Amino acid sequence: MLTFAARVQVTWDVVYLNISRDGISTWQAIGANGQLPIPPIYVTQGDILELTAINHLDKPVSLHAHGLFQRNTSYYDGAGLVTECGIPPGSQFTYIIETGDQSGTFWIHSHYGMEGIDGLRAALVIRDQDTQLLDEYDEDILLTLEDWGQAPLNSMVDMLKTTPLVKLIPNHPTVLINGINANILQPIRFTPGRRYRLRVISMSFTYWFKVRLPGHTLQVIEADGIYSQPSAADGLDMCPGQRYSVIITACESLEFNYALNVTFYSDFIPRSPGLNPRYHHVPIVYHKDAPTKKYPVIEDHEVNWADELAMEPRDELMLLEPVDQHIVLNVKVINSEMGLAIHAFGNYAYASVPVPPLLTALTTGNMALSPSVYAPQLNAIILQHNH
Image 1 (cartoon, one colour):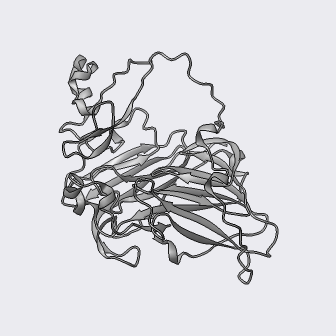
Image 2 (cartoon, one colour):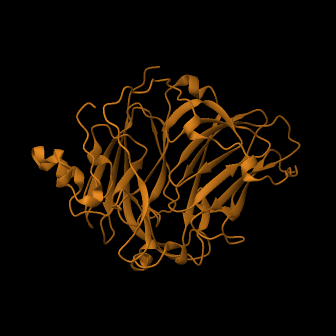
């Protein structure tokens, strides 16, 4: 099928908002165009997204399209103090995001400071042009999962330098599903026999999510924007930033309704009954008068969780072998100057530098091929062209 690419223009006026997203606490969050949640962005494979950010904050901001390859356009990647300096207060910048041959489920978030945690994040869906794939389901449903704190994370920055994070969360975040408190969700309606593509995005920054729909099989077809051969699973165990697409075939009967179970948890924060883990249930309604079918509680080790590393790519491309260069990254836990345990590659934990390394690489000539040109905390690894 031959289609013409479009230029999709979106403008975000990035602003502070005093808002209560969870119905519990009101604080100064960050949104776009006076809105939180920020509406999802929909484009089609091959389109060019022109996303203009106008910064009305009192600090720099940047936007990162999570999962987009940015081939030959790394300067639009939006990683603050890595590929750019950030958009200064009172300024604007337009990101030209070429989708190319990518399609699937992504998201956009700030990648400078704490703005993403404080609300500056939204789903990005790149619709497919593959008619064969479109024939595999009847309806598309988007499910975004977020952790939402009780105050701006920036208010804890000074404490984070001296105090372990586990001691700074006396009140665990609230769960937001599709932008609202998970305790007051509207039901998702299923029609018997209909096939639903459920796109699940973990737009979280600290917590993990587990997603299950007892009584139904999840046919996983996409993980992190990469299509796979369909594989059956009972549930999804999702870290921050992870995305899945699954196809769910609705039951043939109207006898029961069901519950989509969402577990909110963190392994690095002590368990607390009713808080970590926390359980939420999204009603899946077949008939308004039907009872919800009950299932026995099962242990996590009994669940067939989707395994991204075991999936087979749909494009069936061969591995790039033999390789020219092997890179080994040793993940370590080291002590900071304040005595805090932090994670690092090798002996250095990442810390931002005054000049983004991309700009260093573009302005230092042949010296850019030497790791010593870059700050030691960047752990610079030099790759040879076409290797």
